[in-house]
Image (cartoon, rainbow, N blue to C red):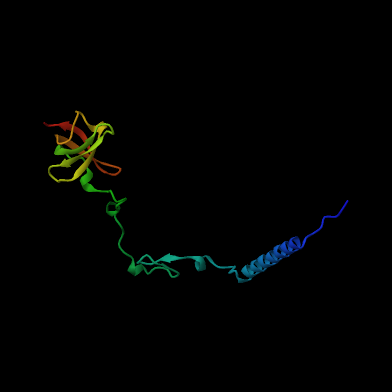
Length: 151
């Protein structure tokens, strides 16, 4: 049996692999030498000051702000007080697509456009119909519910 011949390229690849291994070992030894072992819990602790910045010193209790009331916390951008159901608003249907089953009603009082889905309609409506409806907050804004045709 003949012995496989090592080419010049194979020898060079082996040298590079060994060199990378040595460099990796050196970096590992440097990390071990520079490691900060034996730090206390107090040395590793980080604090937040009264402005929200991270510091290594504990906050001054004299600068502490008063407690936060749960009612003042707003969760999400759609936490709107006017979104509670309103009794019998009137408006005009500006757009309604029967094949897709949705449309928009222009409120006569506030002049805002309110989404209406086909499931919340009690009678068949078309564009330019005057309707009465109630509103509720949906995932993307106000939705009209209990829509009834006036004329």
